[in-house]
Length: 171
Image (cartoon, rainbow, N blue to C red):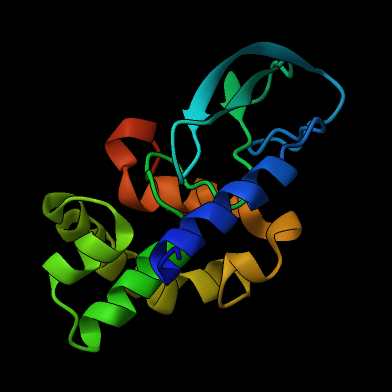
């Protein structure tokens, strides 16, 4: 019988498969019509070796500050290998007294991965608590992913990886 942590990863993978979209909107300028497909890449699902195809798109609006972009399906977050629900559950279990070794065993991941996940989960929890509701107007992007997931991933990228995305976080 799978543990709750493994069940979260399995269900997040199913949600990601269902949320692949073929409609794109440029996150920088809002363009819907002057977009072309611009390659793709694969990304591993959360629960194994299965992959999904993520489409890259190019915005042809000359005034747009972005050249290419991709729209990650909910619950994928840029760069992170785990969904927010998994990180949040790990953090809650750790705060309730579970050891990192126990969490590693229950999730099927190694100790170092869980330690990094907990570190990131603390940073994300603080970010969501302190800034996200002000920026998006919701307490969790997972509550209305069709409306705010793209904006959340953009704000998340700016906040956690500013050098990588060469943008300053919105104020």
